[in-house]
Image: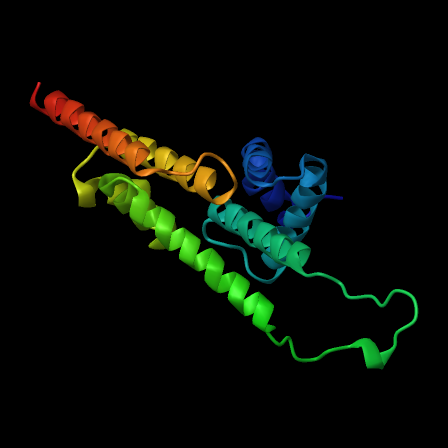
Length: 198
């Protein structure tokens, strides 16, 4: 037996099933959970509609979907802590003290990173710093430095490759390699400037 609320649900909510499924498939990493997500969204919308029907049902449906995905993502990040085997309090250290070795290792790693950043070509260093340290979007970096987004992408890739080579045992960046890299960076910038003039 159909009620007025059921008719509303079919007319205003279920008509968006295809769009909702596409949204879930596009945004949820676990495809096998999409059906369950969709059903839970429908249940939440149906129950909320019993109290008060939303004035914009489609917007309410998709907002509910976004909130449910956010809730599930948060819940998936929580790590359950279950003791395994015998639990001996004498083996538990409540304070994570940084040992002198760990502190020194961190300082050494930071020193190597500073050295390699100093060895990068100037434009490369600027791009890596703005993208990876200041976490600016690619578009903002290109506007700030007055270069194209594609050039930002190339400098970032080149900078990250040079850093990885230096830090993880690739070929070290010697002075000659630096000068060639700088010349190569200047040539790219000159080519970019010529493109802008043409």
